[in-house]
Length: 348
Image (cartoon, rainbow, N blue to C red):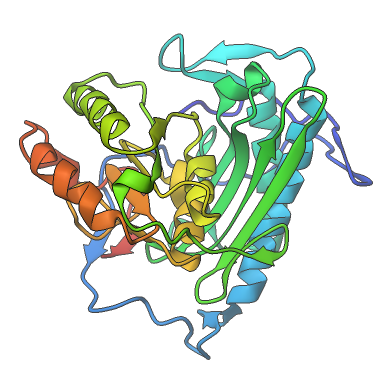
C-alpha cells in the first residue's frame, strides 16, 4: 500500500474547501497478514449496548449517515476530476494504477472521519491504518474503486466507505459513477445494519430470479495471476455457457451494489481487500442477499474469497464452484484472513 505523498489541492466541494492534507494522522499501521484476534459468535453481533438501533452507544442511523457524508465528500473530489487530464502512477505492477485523485479523495474522507470519530481506527487503500489501534470500530475506505476505469473515463468506478464493529459491517455508503463522457451521473447507496439499503434515497432489493440459467452474473480478476485466477477463468467459461452471461466491470464496490439493486444475480472473486468490499457487502445483505466465501464459509471483509448473490442462486453457484476451489493447492490458505490490523478482534 502506498503512503501519502501528495496533498489535497483545494478542490471545491459544494461550498466547502479542502485546505491541504490531513494532519495529525497518528500511527500508521501497514496491512499485515492476520495479526488480529478472532472469536466465534453464535449469531450476529448485538446492535447496541443501549438499544437495538445502536452500536456501542452510537446510533446505527448516525453511522450510516456519516458513511454517506464521507462517501459524498469523496465523490465530489472524484467528480471534479472526471474527464480531465489524469496523472497516473503504478503501484505493484504496470496495471495496478493510482492517481492524484485517489489520494486527494482519501484525504477528504479522512479529514471528515477523523473530525467526527477521533477515537475510531481507519483503513484507507492508499494510506494504510491510522487512528486508534484499540478501537472496535474500523472504517474501510476505497477512495476510487476502479481507478483504471476512471483513468479511461469508463463508467464503472466508485467511492466506497464502510464501517466495521468487531469485524462485522454496520454501516456503509457507495457513490457509483454511471453514464460516461457527456452524460455522467451517480447512484448513491447507503445502508445501516438492520435499517435496509437505499439507492438515491429509495429502498432497494435483490432480484427474485431463482436459477443460474436466467441470471446475469459478474466476476472480477485481480493482479495476482496464480492458480485461483486461472480457476476463475474456467468459471468464467462455464457460467458463460449456462447463464445469460458473465460480466467483468472492474470495480468490486459497483459489482456488489448492482447485485443489491437487482441488476445482476451474483458476483464472485478471489483476493479482494477490506476496502474493496466493506460497504458493498452490507448493501447486498441489507437488500435481502447473501454473502459467503467460495468455500461456503461465513464471510468477513478479511476473507480471501467471496460470492455475493440474491440468495436464490447461491446454492447452485456454490454447487459448481466449491468442490473445485477445494482442489486448489491454496485451498487451506484461502481460509486464512488477511489485512487484519494488529490486535483487532474479528468475531466470526
